[in-house]
Length: 118
Image 1: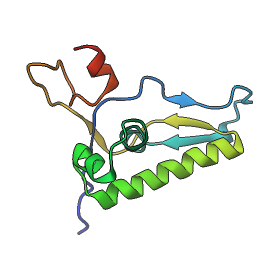
Image 2: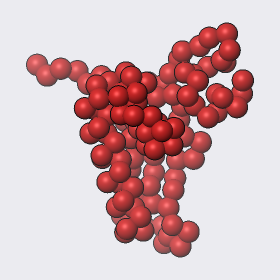
Image 3: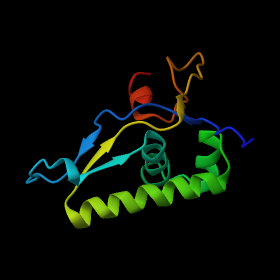
Image 4: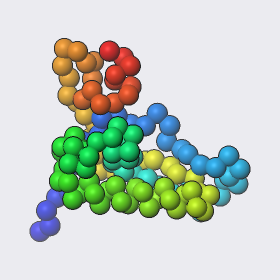
């Protein structure tokens, strides 16, 4: 029996889940689906500047898992840019962060949305 897949911890869902070229023809074949956990690795590593090990701790998975998810996400982004495809962020195997403290209303504190609401 295979080991069950561990759900990745995600701070928040993206505010916008559809990205693409302004001159897109809207073809259904040109849509690349990026999972929420792929989005989260891009956000944590590229936007927040975390190392893969820190990203892995934040998402509660192994560093090698983060590395694989990150590589998959970057390939999808490159494909979308080179071929002019639309990226849609949806699905995946994740759970939203539910850490709370006295200084935070919700989330782990890494999310832009939660930092603005403090």
